[in-house]
Image 1 (tube, rainbow, N blue to C red):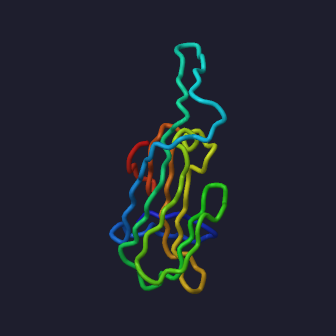
Image 2: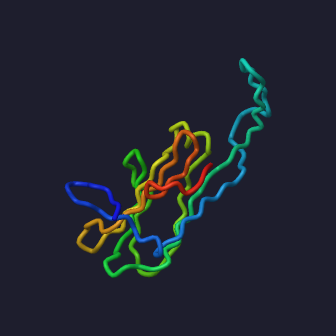
Length: 146
């Protein structure tokens, strides 16, 4: 079984049959002061249309395990993105940001989803990571590409 070592403990990855992940892409306008501009580069001009792909992850919990009490979502900067008590299978949406910023590290590109019992012990995790190349990894396994 694969897992992550934290504080001397081996925390297992969440069983895949208990959740479903979906990566959503939406073409959104980027807040800007101007209209389309052309930025010259050494090879060819790049048209900035003021829009880019905006990413979200939908996490559907299909079933709760006996010790599931709370879910915590933490980004690679250590910020708590979400924390919620679990009473029944539920859906969570993680707003990731623009694809370019995720790839270059300006936006969070790693997320740790922790399942915690009522004694505040992490019982299982889901790791989500986006690489500079645009690979989308779930629990260190290639899941797709952005």
